[in-house]
Length: 246
Image (tube, rainbow, N blue to C red; front, side, top):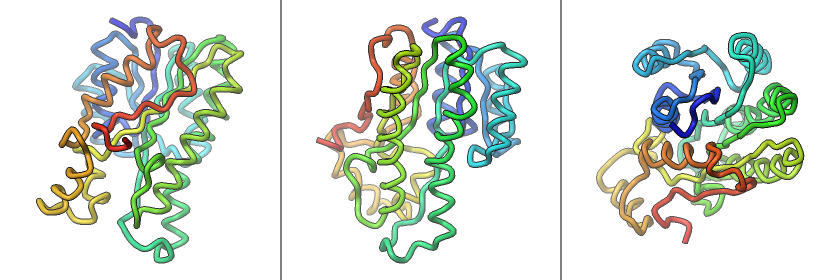
């Protein structure tokens, strides 16, 4: 029960890494608010673990503000914020991505973290405690061709994590990031461009441990880094990548 008594909000919690993190946090005793755009899927995920949920668009200021207000009114505090919601674009030459899609990628992957700072951090400052976890990517550390603007958005998230950690440390708020390699999630097809055995094998050849990451891999690491066991860790970017970034 590493997270007993903690209130945690997880964005993009309906499926993939977010779902895995929600399940693990629930097992470890946290009260969780699962936030996602997909009402039907997030409601079912929350029901399965007997937790709360909210319809949230992480790229929308009013939606994120409403989420923070809901949590404070119902639970009184926010102990853990996991910025997991993220999107990518299909592999293509960097000049071929449309401006509309570029804006969408940065709104979800980057602006959502800005809204976290704007609407959730003030409550953590008042309670003089908190843990923020940003789900970045190996793409922000070891970029691959043709995913240029997705890579850049995750690089932004890594820098944001470090600067938030420095600024918020005096308020006893820790900020860390995880950098997973591509995993068995709904985004895998987009990363590969086309989910075929050939493309899977080509990607797996770049991972020394020889497998994709799983929601369980991310969940176990997230649980540790957000728990009091990691109270001396802030500003870290933990690679959950089977050796991909070596």
